[in-house]
Amino acid sequence: MRSKLSITAVLLLLAGLAQAADDTAAHSNLLSQITATQKRSKFPPEFFIPHTTENRKLQVGDEVEISVFGQRDTIAENVPVAPDGKIYYRFLTGIQAEGRTAQEVALEMESKLGHLFNNPEVSIIPTKFISNRFAIFGKVETGGVYPLDTPTTVRQAIAKAQGIALGKYHDSWIPIHNYKDSWLIRDGQKIPVNFESLMIKDDFSEDIYVRPGDVIYIASALGREIYLMGEVNQQQSQPFTAGLTLTQLISGLDAGAGGYKEASADIKRVVILRDALNEPKVFKVNLDAILRGKEQNVFLEPGDIVFVPEKSFLFTRNLVKAMFSTFVNTFAGEFASDINRKYLFPTGTQP
Image 1 (cartoon, rainbow, N blue to C red):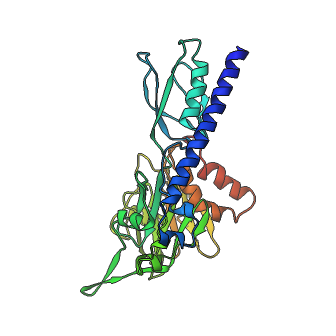
Image 2: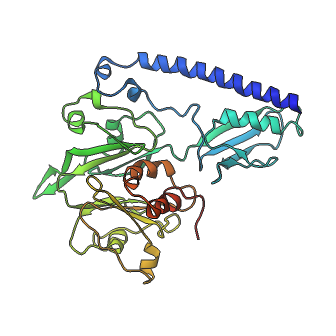
Image 3: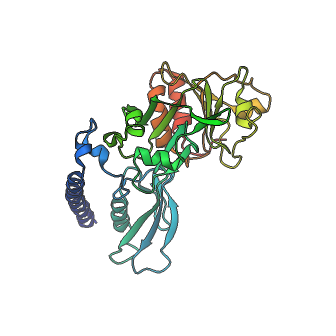
């Protein structure tokens, strides 16, 4: 038994060394393809390397296909990484998957299936990366969450959202965006993309590649708007009107359209982000209790961002972390830890 474990450890080490060598060679090859314009950019070269899912580490909510080579009836499709970070395969107890590559998990499975199969060869193929998405909202035509299924730059991300939105004034369409106050957030940090240079002057040294969890915001020139995101029927921004409440915004009573997705929306944990660019404040609101008359309605303020999360562990944890962690970190004590524990990083469907 000890000998078998030692062999497995050696295989894991060799696989890791081989993968590291491959990654280094691939990285060097990509860096050599960076254009002269990109080399003059204020951003590091890595920002101009396309995102790839190869050798991506698994996260909660990802799905994989598992099979044992040459063994009938061993294929399991759409196997999720569970809320506890483990994969549960038919013959085995839970195996840690979160934070590991599919290859690493497969090697451990092979060592644990040895008592059932002779020299098992396990194949694990990722079929869905739940966090492989980015968000774009503000003054674009169709803001929302988009899959990052192909290499995508900032300009291409804006194109996916059908471009910059225009407003109608009398019989003419006029710009209503403000590039100066627009931003991109990555891993809780504001990335200094100059949207004016990128979009107006065609300065491609600003056109970096989007990464999973990035949030792009195209600011409004009007300055007094409310934003609605998440599990709603229509992600939108609308002009602020005095006396506008949370229920009016989500139901669409004020704008004539709206509603939340009853099957997937967690209306017990709606988040309001207020004064995001100056002194950000995060509020967690139980919309369900408000609708049932058990809690008071909430009056909104200009610039509020309202986010309705998904139920259960399929909620995109990295996306929300990227969007809110900078702001949540400004808090201390029980309130901040409650936001992190119960809202940002849920571990399962809450009652």
